[in-house]
Amino acid sequence: MKLINFLSDMIMPLVVAYILFYGISKKIKIYDCFVEGAQKGFKTVLEIMPTLIGLMTAVGVMQKSGLLDLVCAAVRPACALIGFPAEAVPLTFMRLVSSSAATGLLLDIFKQYSPDSFIGRFVSVMMCCTETVFYTISIYFMSIKATKTRYTLAGALAANIAGTAASLIICRLCWG
Image (tube, rainbow, N blue to C red):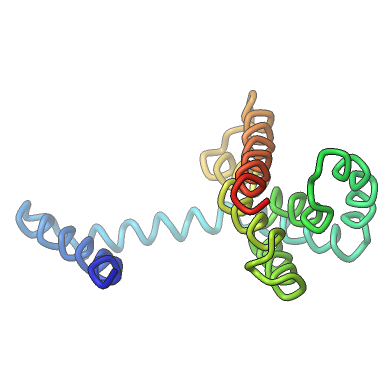
């Protein structure tokens, strides 16, 4: 275990050292490349800023208006039929839009039920098996200025549903 902890502590410094030594050995101007990359990154951030602001506003509106509560109340009976924990419904929907809002809901579940409860374990696994679909799609496609996404949204939602279902099945098998 000590070896694994040591390796996890050393991996980033080793990667940085490797990049530096590789650049020096190839006679690359490392600092100039770094500055150029930082400039491109900053331009990308400025280009996607309106999308980020729109998503943050949408999350705030969903939470404060009660829309999330209404949607969750509407799907709770169906969730009860399939054995999906009602406590995880808001987190499941919020995860599609915002990772930080979903993390806030996750911490609320931890406070109320504990991380070692079935629901705590289930939402932990679910968070690892799902993605912030709308955030990711909007950021990726905005950064490359794509307007036609074809089947991206349907595929991403299907993957999230599969990840959520797999999380529930795995947790039921492991922790009942």
